[in-house]
Image 1 (cartoon, rainbow, N blue to C red):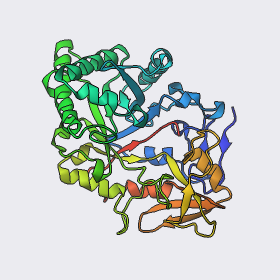
Image 2 (cartoon, rainbow, N blue to C red):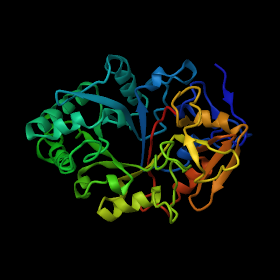
Image 3 (tube, rainbow, N blue to C red):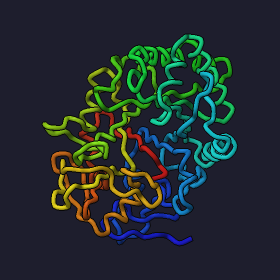
Image 4 (tube, one colour):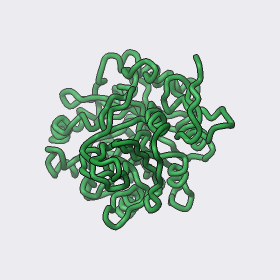
Length: 381
């Protein structure tokens, strides 16, 4: 299979067939280093990567199975997403259970240091089943016991709670506190530690994805000390649902717009979350807009909706990085100095994304209180 070499100045240097993040290599001296070069050049305490179970269903050249991933790229791989039925965690599809789970955990045969987790939730999961599970102690206990059974059966090392968002989206306010109770029960009172003691196996890991926006934050971060790590969703700050262009994941804020990765990370630290457990989320995609006027193409330009869907992801408002590379071939690029991130535009289409320079800014040692802990949104992009 041929290697697809991108043009100089694109985000990545060289792609292997499959076009997914996990296959990125920097093999050509003519190109700038790809992300894998940057990732492998840093001693990561923890580098968490998500794999999405819809990645195999993309068009053939962009389809990605777990077997395609580089097992040495990340310290922790998280399979997204499992589902829930009758307050019990279950595989979302038969393909997940019979094909993808085995492939995913077989990666540990090639890298014995790799840890794998199963994530439940996600945006499309909604909140109704989540609220039902949290409603009573019995329901929570049923969920926890089913999680242990499923994780052990399929050789996962832990569970990732990706519930968006307790207390919002038709989830009652008290779900926030019950979610904290769930964490305490599952890790301390009645489950993971007890199961480890009884079976003489390593304790199952527990992580959670949490919002980067204060409106969505839980009232108390103390219980998150019980988590092994916390994935801060420091992206999707802006998107095509808004009437003006804005960057998906700016590093810093500016007065008219406080939302940024740095603001979110500091907010969680100030709540008491341990710095060494906080994972800054790095998006592996860009958010797009359709401009009202091509001549008004900067930050906060008037927008009328999303730009055209990507060839492979086919989702309005989002471009995977391999799709952004094609976009950049005939686009004008610019840098938002006070936010430390790039954007590009051509005609009426606009995209805010990250590149090598902005990633390097985000992993600067002087920014992190605990250097070397980040989370990638989707390794298949």
